[in-house]
Image (cartoon, rainbow, N blue to C red; front, side, top):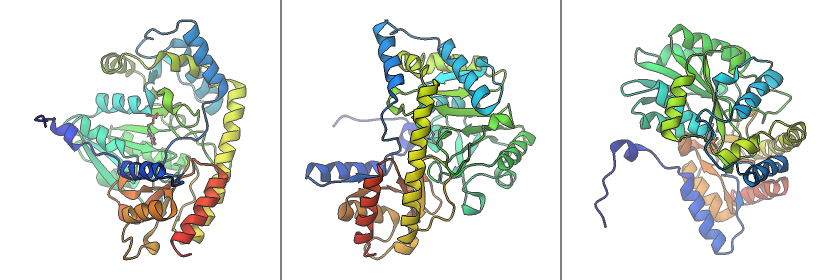
Length: 393
Ligand SMILES: Cc1ncc(COP(=O)(O)O)c(C=O)c1O
């Protein structure tokens, strides 16, 4: 074997534990087993047809070259218009940077704002890549354990408690992955004030906006704080995970540095995807997406009580995204003493794949697992029956 030498930074980046579950699921499927996938963090719906057609037309008309690093001007304007019409918030197109997914936006933000010996505050449990992005730019990720009392979100008190002279930014996601909880306008204001008082940066990942339940229409942080950085994406609500397209909204004065970083790190987001996304804000597409949102809500309403009935503890009703983060402590036995073992057991015995808490941080992960309702209602019913049977319920 070749002598493989890699940088410490790369060495420290952690893989997803769910990949072990996926690999095992694949193996079982090859052996003929029927596996219900509830570990996958992407909509099961295809991209809306109008978006696909716009992408095909773009390719047919030769739109195969680079766009400007900040993105197609028409798309930046369409996104700015979306803030005006959907949120009632004025955002100039100059402040919008089109990126390869929210992942590209996270890389730009971390690259521009964090560095060696600086700290980044993150909610734990939270999206696993965030701490790895921090590591990638040599900053320190400070995981703040959050719980049901704060709806699994960072609070102003957390900022007071954990912020020190080396802290440069706090990053939150609303709705959150894995808990699906949302920051209320009051929480957003308190958080904003606490961060601004310390002259820090607040970064809000709004990738699950649009996918909200119970009549809640999540407001953007920009409604209360125009100095926040907003991460968003066409991946989830718009059903475009494979197109690799997202965006970043930056405060006045930060566009040039993002332009420079984007030029150097990836030149531009995929051209075909940008042309396709111009169709994302059309009325017929939005009608279809609203229908899908409703379907996700129905699935949540089906899965949540069923899991609670099985003795999974889900203290806060998730208001958005397509995840349920369940405490499984009451279900653990000698045979499956922690959530990783439980996930493995449920995969092997019930043929249901879910994600162990370990992927989302260090805050009691051994007692948690995440269910993604990215499969249809019949499969959800079937999954519940199989889990109940495997757990002797
Ligand atoms: C909270 C959160 N942020 C960002 C991402 C990255 O999304 P993408 O790069 O596909 O836009 C994900 C993907 O699951 C996510 O859950």
